[in-house]
Image (cartoon, rainbow, N blue to C red; front, side):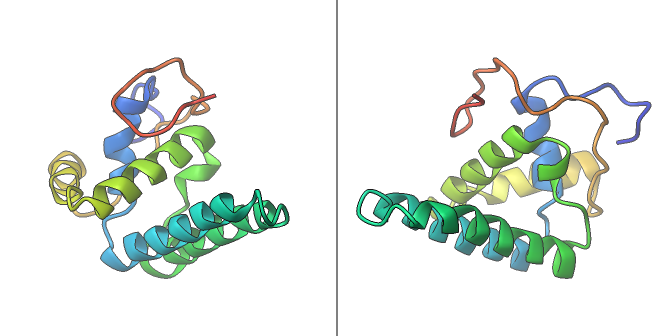
Length: 137
């Protein structure tokens, strides 16, 4: 998408774009590992509060390495921070449950095998209730 395209207004509009930014299987594996480690940090935080500091480092660190080395694109986190987090949680869940492949096919159909460019504007903060994992606020 380019600046001339309409702004993304909801998470459900954002989701196919988000998936198009994660077509490389190694990038998705790195996201899965990073998200799993970040969730693990959150799980142990009641016993080890300092683990909360490590959660974003692990989650974003693995993801950003995947974008830099494999996708060769800019993470959606910089344009749509909350929707990107929600997208990562949805992608993690769909990967865990073996249901990510139809989403990849849909993104390829919409954007081709090349990653889409983000529509500018929007901040990933929405009252959208969509069917995604996570909340926007």
